[in-house]
Image (cartoon, rainbow, N blue to C red; front, side):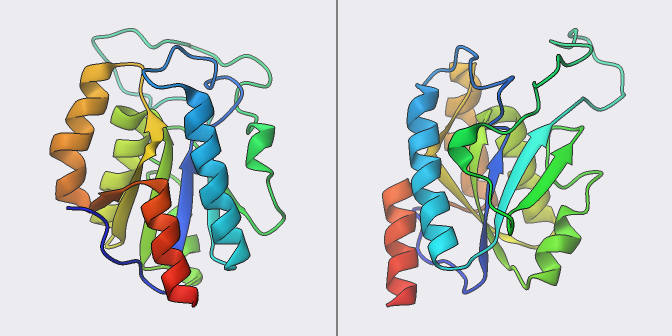
Length: 187
């Protein structure tokens, strides 16, 4: 379902746009993801809506069949990219799982700000973005996913999330559609 509305108190959540990840061989150019995220950041900040910048510094401790890509992260890996232009009012969340809500205080912080809806961007579509969207939905937030502001390393994961998972968690739309809806609200 295309994005139809945004609640008065909507937050933007930017997932894992950090120095150690953005150089990965993504399906879509990460420069486009960054450019679209920057447009959303500018609009949310202009409207004084909450912005959440998420980075990852580890993984959940459980056993897996596939080996983890990195056992430890090199220095600077988790640093947010400068293009996000971190502001003093931004909420910064450091996660150690795929989703930004598990094992963090993100839900409490958003509820303290009166947030009822989230717009999610970032990488990777089928892991960090999808897990964050699932957790937001399960916590009772309305969810919108900016589909042109996300990408994945795996084409099949990106396509599956867009076609089969995201429509069950919320609404999807382009950066332009989301910005237009925000503009209509403030007019």
